Length: 327
Ligand code: KIV
Image (cartoon, rainbow, N blue to C red; front, side, top):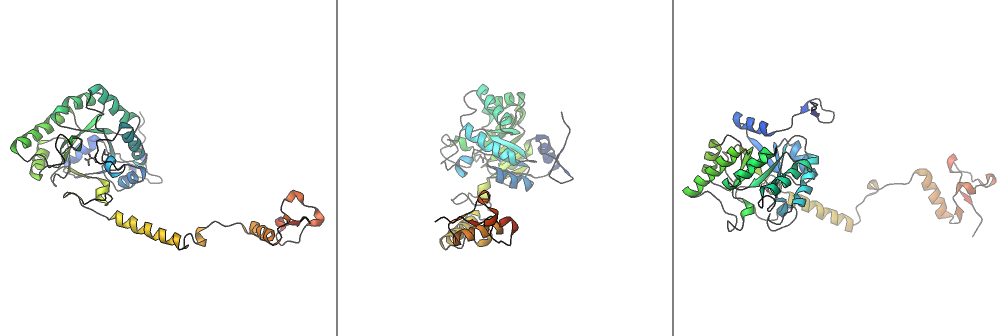
């Protein structure tokens, strides 16, 4: 095993990649864990360079990038494709790949085979699966197979039909108890972190207090060990009103929209591209072209030159223009 540390180009300080252990230590030290989704190379670079600790290639890619109505149609191949792109842009963050609907429910053998592909072929550091206590055996088997697992409970979008839509979970005493039981079972099975989505702040706070592993909240209030948002929500690229828990930090739809409008105008008004945005001939070739335009019957080929035909030219290497006398 090499002990070589990663260094940013030209930088003297080594980059310390975030590991599952580092996330655990952050929880113990009371340091907030930052997490965000990313689905492609440039976004991954930006998110990583911003110092975000955990990057999730979420199956939300289905809605944010691929235009599906839900996360349900997303395939293994689509997730692998996006995870590979993100992995190429990540140097520091802990990289988690979401296992898509249908890739881990049928059997644990198939689930492990699919999870292995994310680690082996796509460069993920861990996979995420949705579901509570009923996934504990799978989490244990994956952990035994050296695959780190992030669990995801509460509002689990892949259960859209079973939950009859997207609703805040854990509102009744029974549901709250069952969430705590889910978190405990998943932690005992080896989950390295637990995403708490769409649950009341009070419930998330107590689950976080009870858990030894970090909780990462989304729509679960400020008391989780960390927070995650969908990148497209944060920058307003979703083309729909945000959910209550989303904070928009920039209006990328307006920003990009106005840039695109100005580009369209510049092209239609022929102010783009400007001369400074164009390539130019070298002076020498420009002279040849000019001469050709003035004397269309000129043969430019140097090998057709006869010494006596050389035209007086201020540029020595351009004494190649010679009238052929034809035409
Ligand atoms: O797919 C996703 O983006 C998620 C989140 C936790 C945000 O699962």
